[in-house]
Amino acid sequence: MRVELVRPDDAETVVGVIRWDGRRGHLEPMADGVQGLEDILRPTPVVLDDPSFRRAGTHGPTVLQPGDYDWFRAAVITRAEALGLEARFVPDGIGYGWDPAATYRTFEHQVERITTPSREE
Image 1: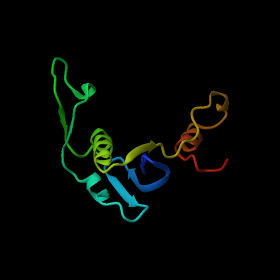
Image 2: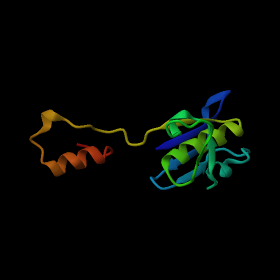
Image 3: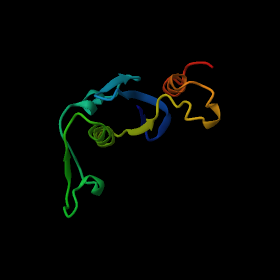
């Protein structure tokens, strides 16, 4: 997953890119003069008032601990907003899906085809 950080008044200019590798985020600043970008991925808990993270019958904010995708997403969104930026989540590697008409391919070839979208056929 890739996140592009942009200013609300200039959505075409990306000021930073954050990539999620499945365990942690990696920041790539794309513009000078943006203070606090490195703080977005600071490994500290995030408080989020989102009902989807609450247990049944509870109310109020939820504390998300660092280390998983839910924390990453909440940290990027809330901390980017605090810096006056917007976060655009862009999926990496949009590739092929399952092709039932391609059953002539071996299973291994199908898996390779689905998991490596940049490979030319």
